[in-house]
Length: 211
Image (cartoon, rainbow, N blue to C red; front, top):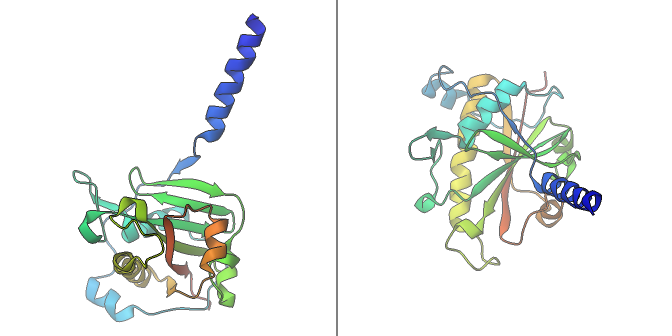
């Protein structure tokens, strides 16, 4: 009986470990420096040709903080606004080595899949080979919208703020980027294992411009 009890406890602990999401801490973002705002606005543009080189981890950390990181620790508010402070937007980070969800609180990445799902992030050819695609997802369960079939209009505006942050960061750091809406959202929703109340709004490709 004692051995049986040990086996049961081992199984329970194993199941608990499997059920817990795998998260990794990003390097702390560098929150100073960069190009002056007016110069970044002058350099802002869309890029559709990308080099295959991965973004260094620190650069990715800075990018995600600029996009949707927490810039006021005492209130938990972000670098971009959201309607009624619902903070319903999640950024899914899609790279060759897998898919991760950015968790602003704690500045973490949560592993969603080990698969390379870049080709599902848009219908343009460059999407599948670019090093990074950001997929913006609205979790309507965090909002007052209970009709999942209705268009989440406010979430489109909220994603627009985030996407512009990314544009300005990329201009400052010599990166290329383009925001996109041409996506097979139904297929990507399934690949990202999203719930019915989670809606893909837009995607944005990021990388070093192709020389």
